[in-house]
Image (cartoon, rainbow, N blue to C red; front, side, top):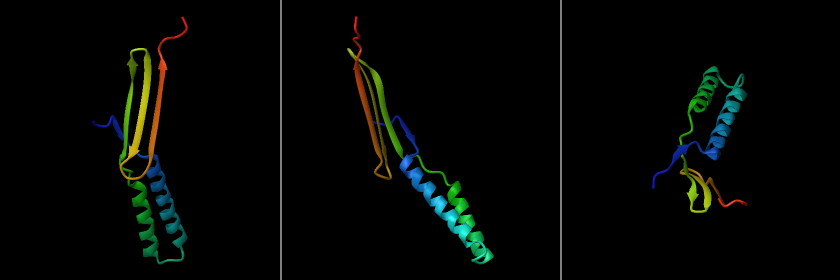
Length: 98
């Protein structure tokens, strides 16, 4: 079965954002302490990392519909790179109080 959608994993995005912040901090803290070339290299690495987009590694599968007297929604997501998973399922009877 193929996925309904592929998107960016929130856990991988958080790790990427933390790596960018760490690289920027390293570059900023080297200002005036390292050589001009080393500072420029640190800054360039941080900026390159910042511009690198996270890949779409989160697989999303979902279904919505009515089956007989039951309305159901299901959503599952899992990342190909990390251990992030999420699942939601809900079903309700379509027979209301009459």
